[in-house]
Amino acid sequence: MSTEAARWDERYTEHPDLFGAAPAWMCERLAELPPASPVLDVGAGQGRVSLAAARLGHIVTAVDLSPVAIDGLRDAATSEGLAIETHVADAVVWLQEARTRSWGVALLQSVSTGSSVSDRALFALLRQHCDGILAEVIERVIPADLVRESWPNAHIERAIAKLPVLRITG
Ligand SMILES: C[S@@+](CC[C@H](N)C(=O)[O-])C[C@H]1O[C@@H](n2cnc3c(N)ncnc32)[C@H](O)[C@@H]1O
Image (cartoon, rainbow, N blue to C red; front, side, top):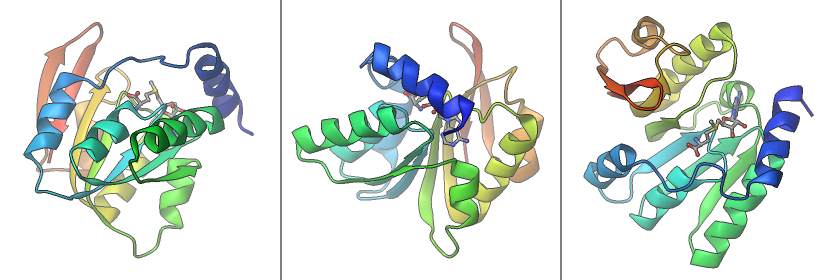
């Protein structure tokens, strides 16, 4: 297991609801998608965004490095009777192997791989596999220019949260 996965496992084991409810902005955008949209939640964590999407009737695939996070997500989905496809994996590696799979929308909530090279690869792969993107990322971690390299037409709105964030729709 990678150091990053072990670090997240530890945090999620200590806090079964580490990030609380799904952010309102993301929920509002999810509600605007066509019914039963196929969505890919990248770095899904304990699944607050995946669960919000599945409750709205979207078809959700969730990927995260952390086995503890994905276990929690699966348990929560099962207890609500929601079907969510889950994978414990590095999203960059997993998407490279995803071949012809495609999704309507990629979802990223507060996610970075920890390296700008991998973040750039991740956004490029999402562009290949997904028609659209909904993302809320920390601006100093994933700058707008990096997003625009793969998603030149994305709408990027700067929003001040606890940390300045970029809200990306495209
Ligand atoms: C700040 S948390 C956000 C979790 C979730 N999106 C949310 O908003 O609740 C970041 C998550 O990204 C995951 N992550 C980081 N790098 C990843 C990668 N390369 N592939 C898959 N997941 C990754 C971590 O394991 C962690 O669960």
